Image (cartoon, rainbow, N blue to C red; front, top):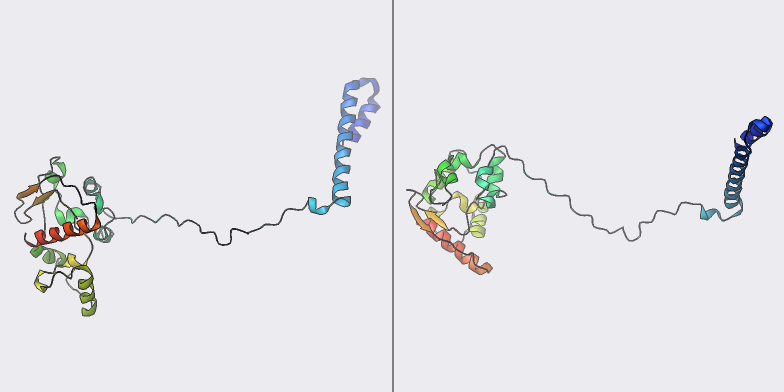
Length: 223
């Protein structure tokens, strides 16, 4: 293309400025030089120099890719008002299992507006469940318990072997973890009377947490 343009410029004679002719000649020479250079590299030189380097997986064959982030369980209820103070229950299994079935906090504990709006945290929820009220509440939706006896005994031994009296066992002893390990506020779950309100620091050791949890269990059994 450039040589053709140069020929046209030359045929026009004085009508074309000399600098245009020089520019066209320079471009034609550069193009020819590049073409000859590539031809020499490809035909006379080392063809490997132009080859695409092979794809190597060396060092990557045993690479461990990061796990995809776990998908958050989508609930059919809005418990966000409760999570303001009770964030520990946001990923708790009882909340997730029931939330997927459109059963939220208020379905068991009532709307509890006074409790939610009390910044001093001395007003109890609308509904609380002492041990003798837990099973009747669960039976409102779960009338049957079709689990083999062997599995019941196994779960009891894993979760609450300290409870040797069957009359003291309740549904939540074996199912879920819907309890606070430590409480700074305690009400009588039958009357709603405030019993304890104090600031408590959680024990630093695991053994201390276990002792506190056991004490919590004993107190719950008395109310």
